[in-house]
Each structure stands twice: as C-alpha cells, then as structure tokens.
Image 1: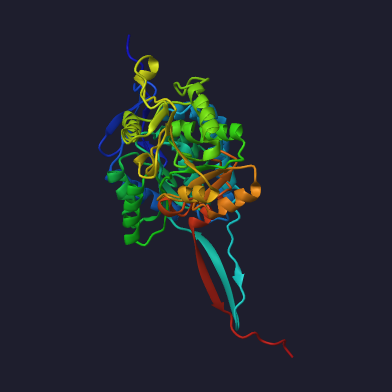
Image 2 (image 1 turned 45 degrees about the vertical axis):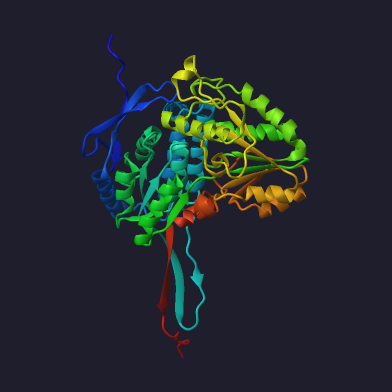
Amino acid sequence: MAAATRPAYSLFIGGANVPGTKNETRTVPDPSTREPFATVAVGGADDARHALEVADKAFRESNWASDDGARRTKALFRLAGLVEADLEGFAQLETQNQGKTIRESRFDIGFVVRTLEYHAGLADKIEGETIPVPGGRFDYTSVEPLGVTVHIAPWNYPLLLAVRSIAPALAAGNAVILKPASLTPLSSLRFAQLAKSAGIPDGIFNVVVGSGSAVGEALVDDDRCRTVAFTGSGDVGRRIQEIAARRMIPTTLELGGKGPVVVLADADLDRAAKGIGWGIFGNAGQMCWAGSRLLVDESVRAPLLERLVALAQKLKVGPGSSPDAEMGPLVSPEQQESVLGFVTEAKDAGASIVTGGQRYTDGPLSQGNFLPPTIVDGVNATHRIVREEVFGPVLAVQSFRSVEEGISMANETQYGLLASVWTRDLATAHAVARRLESGMVVINDPPTTFPQTPFAGFRGSGLGSEQGRRALEFYTRRKNVMVNVGRLKGPAK
C-alpha cells in the first residue's frame, strides 16, 4: 500500500505559489509524534530579494496605498471573514504544526480574526491635520505608509503573532513580506492564499520561508525594507537592530520575558492557582509573557504551592489534536532538551523538583516532545532558571516577607514584559503595578491581552509596541506641507 501523499507548501510571492530559486524543500514533523506530515519550500537570499522587488513594485503601482483607505478596510474585513469561515481548518493545521492543544489553536485563530477586524476599522480613519501658522500661509500634514515592511514571526504563536504586526501594516497601506519561523510556516502560507482571495493586490502580501541568516538578513539589509517587526530571542533582535541602525530604519522588537507573578498574603489562593497554572502551562509554557517566576508571600507559600502541585499533576498532557488535552508537546526535540537542561541545572544547584521535571519514558507521550508540568522550589536569583527565559512548562518558586521585598525581587531581571499581581486589596494592587518595571501588568488575572490593548516591554524585552492604535501609527510617516497663499485682497470697490 502506497504511503499517503504529504501536503506540499510553496513560497508565496507576487500573488503566486513559487518553489524558491534552489528548489529546496524540507519535511515538517508533528511535535506529538515527530513524524513528518508535510513538506515546505525553503527559500534563500535570492528569494528574499525577489520578494522585495515584487513588493516594492506593488506598493508603487497597485494603488493599495493611494486611496482613502476604504479599499483596505473592505479587503481586511473580507480576509477576517475568510479566516473565520476556515477557523477549524486553521486551528487543526496550527496544532499539527506547532503542537498546542486544539482549544488553544481555536482561540488563537479567533484572535487573528479580531485583530484583522480591529485594524480594518482603522484603515479608513488615517487622517492628517491642519495647523494654524502666521501670515498668508496654509499648513497641513499628510499621513503616508512607509513602503515595504518586513515581519519576522516566531514559532510559539505562528499566525497570531504574524498577523499582530501584518494587520496594521496592511491597514496603513504598506506592502508586506512575512518570514515565518522555519519550524511553523504552514498557517502563514495558508493565510496568504486567503489574502489573495480577499482582494489584497498581488505583491502586497508575500511569504518567504527560510533561515534567519539567509532570508531574514537579506530582507532587513536592503534599502527597499523600510521597517522591521520581529518577535523572538534577544540575540537575534540585537542583530536585527544593528542592521536596521545602519540604514536608520525603525524597528519593533519583542524579545521575550521572565514574568514575575507576585502573590500577596491576602490573595484568593484558589483563583490565583488557576491563573498561575494557565500563565505557565498554557502552550506548554512556550510564551514570551509566561508567568515563570512565582514570588509568593512566605505566609501563604505552602497552601499555594499545594494547590499548584495538585493542578499540575491533574493537567491532562497529550497530543494537541486530542479534544481533552490541556497541554500539548514542546515544538521540537531541541526545545525539549533545552528546557530539561534548565531543570537539571537547577536541581544540581540545590533546587527541589516538586513535580515533573523528567521526560516521559514509556507510552505514546515518550514518542513526542512532551514534558510534564514542572514546579521547581528552592531557587534563588543566581540560578539560570530564575534569570533566563526557559520557554517551557516550568515554574520557579521564590518567597518574600514584605511587599517591598516582593517588588524588589520582581524587578531583579533583565526583562520587563508582563508581570502579574494577586491581591484582594486593589489600592495595594495599583500601587504595586505602578512600581513594577514591566510594559504590561495584569491584576488578578492570567496573562491577558486584546487587539486594542498595547503589547510592549521594557528593558531587555524589546522596543516599540504592538497592538492598539499606536501600532498602526508605527507603519506610517507624517509629512508637513506649508503653502504660501499670498496676501489676501480686500473686497472690490
């Protein structure tokens, strides 16, 4: 019996599927089984330059940027509708490619739809202004798109984090080139087909799959690239910033976090435990804003830890496609090894593995990239598991004796993306939130965001802001025009 044919995905440039200049492909494995289920074309620097050429021409010749925005509004609303109509197909593909549970994938694709709708509603509301000036002059500003924008997306939320920057760039009238993560490009390529069907002109939206060193650098280090949006590691983000700085182009960089979860003595521990669990075990902990550092008042440490251990041990781990799975696998064997390395190192340094911490050795889960929910107690600020981003289902536990000490510990990090506060006293909650050095703070909630709320980090977590109205403004430039209309003549006599 012949083996089933694997779906084959191509690059998407100029409104067409193309194989790439070198005709190279690679197989795409399912993280739950490590078995290949699809093939995808792999592009290189020549494909990146071709996409830049096509996008630049489309930007100048398609009228995508030159109308009043109504065309872009309609196209983005149509695109949102097409994605929503195929939500289940997208969710199944995202789960098979990335590994997360089907429930999480459905939520992610729903967020994609809402993001497109939000920016569709802004596309025809990009406005300049008139400015009173002395003399016989008329002064006004016009708001223009930048041109070709480059978007380099990560693998943990493949389509959601791509569309987070693509939607405002398209709404503002730019031409877009997306480089998805090499591990998880499939939903982006499927999305590109719908963009064409929605009426986005050929060349305005392009997808080039390939390595960061080949495709990514070729896209960024080109005069036709007018800005870069990147989500990923700090080392890569700094490299992108160096290249962009040479050409004086703006960047948005979201570079991860080491989120503190500050639990005060008066917190609702049952509610906190559920929120903390979602904030570290959701998407198998592969989240830039994961609440990976638990900082808990010493007086409630034991009862909270008891609740968290019970939650972790009851969590159903399994293939993302399983309808009752509550946590899926890690994205790759390499990521599994990286996470285990953090846990082993912490244990060797004297920390205690309260639950989890080892790979599955038998049964179906041993065949995939699975790790159990893990809680590590007895850590301190010198441990790498406290200082660096683990990007796995691992919670590191510390305690404090005063609110002041808790705030100090929370801020003892190179990152500053998202922090959480759990307390019944809202006055204290606001006071603590003000002093946390983090771009986002949630109070009595797990990590939460919406398309209309800013997503931004401080310090090593990056530059700029995603989501919200200001995200669209980032993809525009403002031009001032002053006209000397001459001295006004009086009425004829």
